[in-house]
Length: 432
Image 1 (spheres, rainbow, N blue to C red):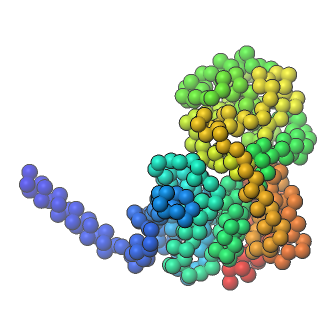
Image 2 (cartoon, rainbow, N blue to C red):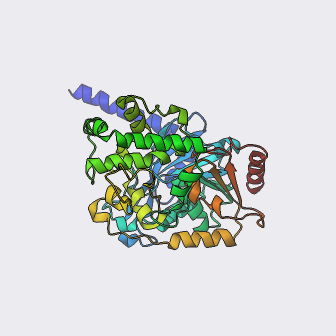
């Protein structure tokens, strides 16, 4: 037994020695930064070195007395003197663990990446979890601290970027800390003016896809409602098998799945040809609907609860239209659905504050930052994007680009010419 123990100890010492030998100068520099802890190397197919770590953040603003927590960040290094992209994720950053992780901006400019998980998600949750501190301004203070800390190592130009809620974060970050980065690219970011903004329902009824596409979608919704008696057993069985739980009766959740369907359908460009014909079997039609607009979206425990809290408080969201459907729905009004379906009862007291929206609109209209917005023409989120009102014709720097026919996955690489070249040329100039 002693011999086995001795051998085990020897092996552990040997492994530790090897690990110490493999610790690079850059890793040692990361570990020496203030507030950085638990630095772990990761595999990467694109970067010279890659690490995941925690950075200590204040739970509330600059007041450390209210508590701190560890925010998970990923650092992907090519060259400390190259440009660095700070990715302002809006949710979990778990995908950063993938050895193949990279983004188009890091490829275009041979840049480093600092990927920041959003507070209250996944590995970045304060304990205790006080939801009062889940605010956009606190999340921006997190980013500012990351930028100041990692800026001690990365000496090149900095560019912020994010997609969807991450794109919102990029926008708000630039508004609040305009000098932290040298350029910003915000992808498909809505800027909602209330909990139920009101513009998305109009977009889905009048602008999403073609008139023929919209008619096919509406008829499919109506068919699902007309077949309620046949569909409900399938729906209940599906929810039971997946152990879904809801705050509303199952009959109402069924309606909300159908109300959500057009947004989900157009958001990522589902072709109308994939919708089963009206004479399809119950099973065929049911399977299509839950694949595009599944009930998991309305179930609890809700992995997107931190976002839903922010949507109710500051970020806003979209509403639902009952037009053409109300005849068959159990739900006769949808106002306030987000609180009733998505939030736990103890969080429903929060009210929407338009301060963030107003501050952002004022900044973007008045200022001219080195900033690019990317939207998709067919993406329902574009209905509340800055592309609907921001006039850059008299600005030197800031630009808004809309990808023709693009959905919520629109990006620079798929932008048509000459827009694509114009975007790359601007970014190249700003990062020199």
